[in-house]
Amino acid sequence: MTAAGSVLIVMIFAFLLVNTVVGVWRRQRILAVMAEQRARFFRNSIVNLAVLVAVGSIAVDVHPDLTAADVGWRLPEGNWSDYLYTAYILVLLIAVYLRSRKGPLSPGTTVLLPRTGGERLLAGAAAVAFGVGEEFLYRGLLLAAGTELLGLPLWVAAVLGWALFVAAHVYQGGRALFTIGLLGLIFTMLYLSSMSLVLPIIVHTLWDTVFLLLIRPRPAVAEQARAEEEIPAVVVETPVPVPVAEPRRLRAAAPE
Image: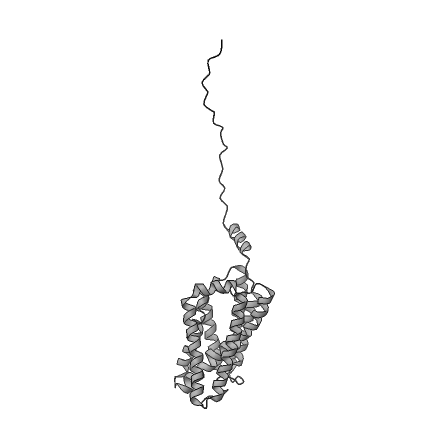
């Protein structure tokens, strides 16, 4: 069963790596498709993450060197620092929400925001899938596989998990990567301080829920109107047209 569990884990991270490379290579195409088929993106994300978590759980169950506790399925064992990180996330949530009310977000971020009631329902389910799935894969399973199976130092496995998490979001563009990198770092610290997925999943899910359901995209018309208000109009005085006298016609010889 050791070989079977290891093969399943390798398949999971091979799938994630391939999707990350494709996301970097075809970023513009992915954003264009997401803008037209946002509901499909949410559905695919939910299904893919559910399958990956199920396969990962089976791999842990059949692998003799891994347990559910090794991948973070246990209660937190941390201290006050967990609550400090959680409070910091809440401050970031408020800051991002207030910023979204003052100005537009990056195009790669705005394209994710739902527009219809159906998209909002899918986005709420996707927020839970992102919180559970990404924390299990990039924190719990990767750190456990790196330390228990490959013998990597914990900090090396943590950096690898963080880097893969950030790379998976490259399609959102450079403006969003700073926030994503900071979030990934905080989620990793939450996990390392508690050795449990409970707090990272709660905070991650809360972040995605607020982002997807409370931040509204600005209509294109409103954006254009606001841009026109911010740019002073240039008044060009049009000269009054001056009538041009027609050339005098040659007088015909008057009849006698």
